[in-house]
Length: 325
Image (cartoon, rainbow, N blue to C red):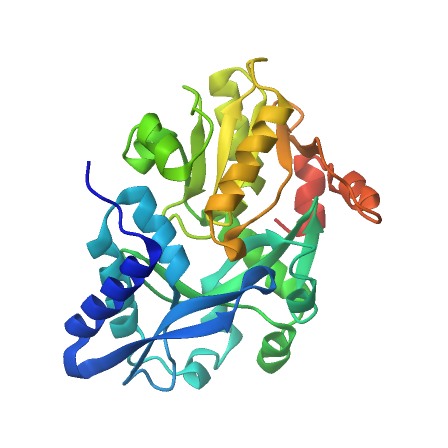
């Protein structure tokens, strides 16, 4: 089995190889920034001919993907590819009109409570304990995408309202590609190796991953009730949906042999492994086939959250009306 680098070694080697590949085109450095959930995190930024845009890539997010797939060269390729794709991109030109931005709108989810400060300036909708919001794809290559959150000031600058934003988001969300695959197939390593790597309780035979094609910010796929319904019908079972991170969720058919307590332990241990800014939720979700209903189970509700939970138990039609999805 190939040895997995520790985080600090990974960061050092990533900086070295990115700088080596860029040569005279740019210089890579580590830059601390505030990210999701109010956490200060390290990014790799590149100084160069990017038209005033400095690509920032979160090191821990790259490290998470590296631990999953073991492909270090893909991480280097993503950073350098992103830089080159943004060399001629100017923010003023990019946000010149709504017609330019509109087809690049994507829907994403984040933890509602942990991101309250940031969400004050971001149009969003509440769903269970999550915030549903939009981002604009700035650049993309075969390894992933770079994006920025849609803020109220951006809409004002573009001269559009939130209703138009959510209309574009609904169209984009139905077109975005998501998949559900067995955890062994999705990660490319066996469940036993995964147990040791993530320090999780033993993986069961029926554990699946739901994410998007880039495996980046793909947890929003849990709101694609059409996909969950199709999968639930195939498995002839209701589904436990576990928030692995903002990048993906775990989906486990309910065969009556999984207790909520065990699954909560799984989520807790998973959150201990992943970077703090990548945590989506500590709660467990449950999808009822036929009813097309997603709800929280075994939730540690705090003051003021009871009404949010009740409002969040929506049918597919109600969700589309409430979220604009």
